[in-house]
Length: 300
Image 1 (cartoon, rainbow, N blue to C red):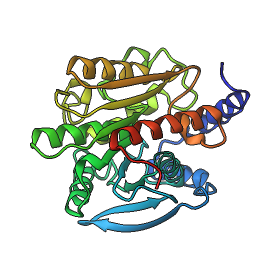
Image 2: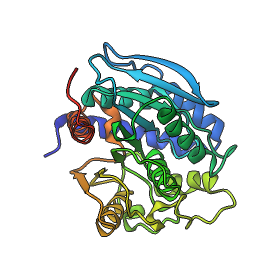
Image 3: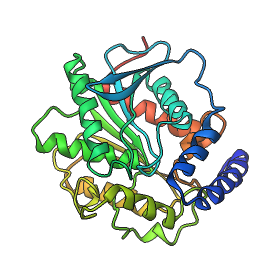
Image 4: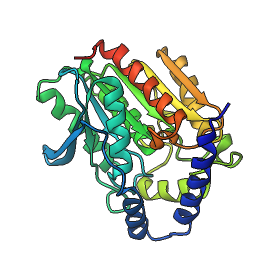
């Protein structure tokens, strides 16, 4: 049964969604998104600092009591057009706390200025930079929400195709995996945050002049054979529920150890309300358990 707090946060999310959908200019949409997330603060004891990985902007987010060898490579959402704002910084920090891991967030290039494959290329650069920095691949977990979940899968497929070392596991939060828009729930669900028109129009900026059926744009059409264990979170009420379910089915067919968790009455990336929404806190704790299990680390 949904918590009492979930009703308040769902209404607040709907208000935000109405405003976002009324903005047609990408620069104005970025300004609005950055502004509403600005008041959010990192949890106590978490530090962050920015630098570059072979020219790509990245940010270390470091909770207290981390297992020094483990790293979460985090790829933020935002429909490929919105940047690395506090709303994702705070979520990544809580995931880091829950898993006792450092987080390396990638401030990848954005569409429409930089369409596919720019964001994917930046994600690959950051992952390879970690390996060069001495982090073992089996101590890395790639995680991402929404568009970031898409990028996490595309990153894995690229690494697999190139015969490079793969991370220990992957976490996809409300991923958009089919940019052709064939998911049944895309137009049938009443998502508090995301609308089909917004998702499709923003994804077109990322697709550019390419075919949306390309597996590195729409992992739904890709071969998942050989990829590491996968945790997928989706909300029962979100428009991308079909994408999550089909991803889980494709992963199982490819022989991947996959866990799909569909949260009752939740919407697109409800995790962003951690720690104030009980369902968000529970979901982040579950992600932390999954990450710890697969990197075999314990609290330092």
